[in-house]
Length: 166
Image (cartoon, rainbow, N blue to C red; front, side, top):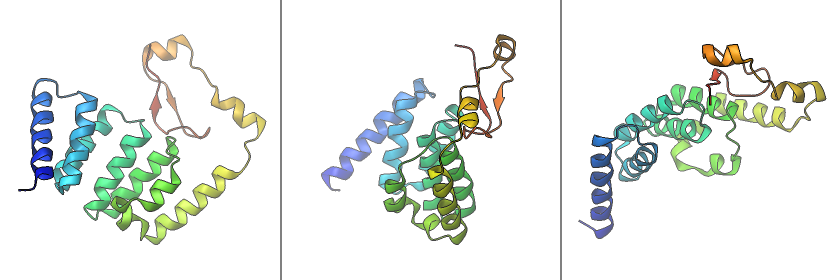
C-alpha cells in the first residue's frame, strides 16, 4: 500500500474515532467526507454529506458537496435539486463549479446547463432598490422565539431558511 493511501486510512480512522464520541463535530465530518470521496468511498461520503446537510441546511458549501456526492454516484436528479439549493443559498464559485470533476455527471445534463445559464443571467441583473431593502428583513421577537420564521426565497435568500434566536 502506498504511503499516501496509508496516511489517508490513518486519517479516516482518526476522524471516525473522534465522531464516535462527538457525532456532530462539524469539522471532523467535513474532513471525513472529503477523505471518503478522495478514497473513492462515494457511498460513505454521501452519508457524511447528508448528515452535514441536516446539521447545516443553509450552508451553500455543504449543499454543494452533497450535490457532488450525488453526481459521483450518478444520481443526477438529486444532484440537480441540491445544487439549485446551494446556488439559492449563496454558492457563487462558478469557476470551480464548471471545473469540478465531481460534478461531471451533472454538468453533462442539459436541464442543469439550461438552469445554470438562466441563474447566472438573473444574478447579473441589477437589483432594484425595493428588492434590496427586502434583503434586510428582520423578524419580530415573537417570530424569533416561536422559531417559526421562514424566508420564502423571494428576496434571493435560501428557501426555507429559519432564523433562530441568538
